Length: 150
Image 1: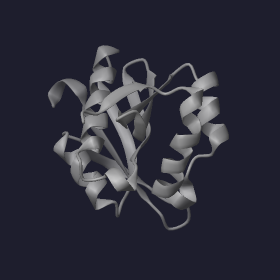
Image 2: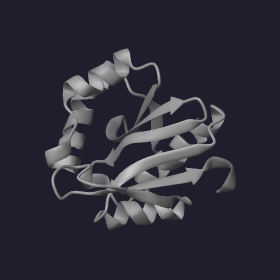
Image 3: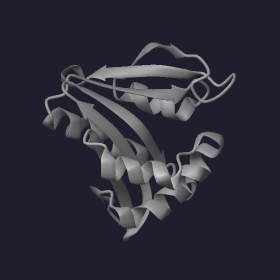
């Protein structure tokens, strides 16, 4: 069973919100947020990853001139450990490169060690801390990678 990636559609949003809510609990995006991103943000690029036509993960990214910001990325808990996060991240970086992006950045909870290890394996570096980014006392590491130097 090979994973497949496709552009996220409005028909995918209910499933995406299920994964989002299970993955991010207190900071999960709402259905309305995903709808706004898909219908009203000209900088947004959202994709899903599926196994056997079942959506098991997704990512979102804004591309503005020579910078890309990964806004969200998650894999269904039942499918973690299968390198689907790496599959999504590789696709996101390749997509950014195809838009002539120089830098891809993201935020990650400072205690999310599996995600941090994944980002480091792709060459992401630390760029600072965003205090209370995920709520009071929940800081984020800002990480970035130069697309052409990885």
